[in-house]
Image (cartoon, rainbow, N blue to C red; front, side, top):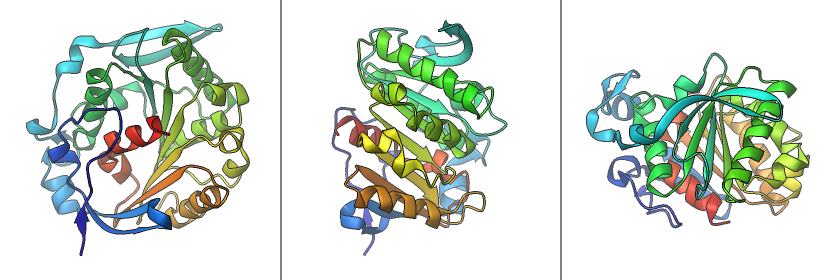
Length: 275
């Protein structure tokens, strides 16, 4: 029998869990490290959105973070980077950085109403728990983009007094996560990663990030035609076999964009912060 996912343990208090956490687990595996979640477009898009894929129903969002959010250009190490920031610029309890995919910019991660309101939930989880949420506009997905994000990670770690920094990457944005994973200095400043519908990097298990045994949570749609869920699951199991903390959530019938809509941010952040 399918069972509803249980409440996430960890430091972050609930936020609209009754709406976002009511996901049915079809099966679990890998000693509990992987799960298959029931996903249905009619329910999870059409039933949740006022305008499908454009505007979620009002009860899914809370606009309180608007009081503490800004679009700004930050400069560090001689680099200027456009970001959206939600929460304090310094002294935060933790930092979450969201990296968009190809064709996106900071507006995607700051939009409260798309992706079923899931990024609004991420904002609220950060702010309500004393954290800060950053969405940079990634100028390129090569070594220059990686250097920009490494500088942002270092800046967030410094301004927070060494508090946890979590890097989350969606779709092609995963190129940034993988680039960061090979940068020992950046890895030292990271608490963990989440990769949502990301590309498959066969060298990730050999990275400085993996060798440091930092936690990573993959989420992926089973029907993703851009990046293979099965190939990503193979990477996950390689990490797991090496004794590295890893989780994998597969959304059954979900497509490439499904993880940004469906990832349970409270569960993911609590798991990473608790490692």
